[in-house]
Image (cartoon, rainbow, N blue to C red; front, side, top):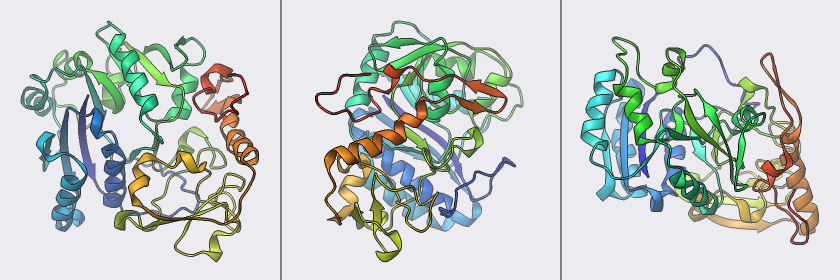
Length: 361
């Protein structure tokens, strides 16, 4: 698979919409982008080529050397190409296709047009199974929406086909820049129509101009989360909060207090406790994350310097607390004017941690 990134990194937001981060702070966007890239580097064994088109806003220009050194440290240099600009026009996309992609044998492109969608899964097993299924699909127009999972798992719920319990698949006109796409789809986007002088910074605009149907997969567990969360789709922070960067992450010095009870009593530590409400909901006793100890994001693993077990809690208590949060995704959900359906139980089998003797849903 080819990683293809095309972003402009800036603290300024083009959209008038402001995401609610529920008191989690607003780190500068270059640090958010580095956090995102670090998460994608855990997929290095899957990348055959890495193509990075990156433009930095004026106030970040002095950090180019820092960013270049960071990229060189986390991605294999022999397969990585970095450009100091972003693609903005159709002609530039066509030139990039001819320069970077046309001769590549890989079928799929992980296309990322945003600087803040973070790979949060705890291993690569599910991702590899998903890619295997997509590769076995002989259609030419094959995609997978890897982010905005709370929305798309519901968009697909009413009429999707379940594929081996791994993913739902349905016909979609979505062209958002958060997808794994077949090369046929990517080529069509930039060569099939004449976009004239349209703004082509991301592929999102295409769906507003043409109906281009793809065979779209939606994973049965969240692989990637938007850093600023999903307040736009009314997914509240008690089940799906925004992300924040653990203290010490860039110095490989994350200190985790596991099953502690008070975040404010341990400054400098990242509190992880599945039994507490999130800090974004309860500032007094809230936890940073609710992970089980084995589901810390894969890209954290070599950046954790210490894990302190504050209190030993029964395994069943931790499992039940963690799963209750995930089961909240079952419920009917209102998104803008639409009521989105309740999720089918089987879609949660890869999302829950089940007891060994407990049957699949």
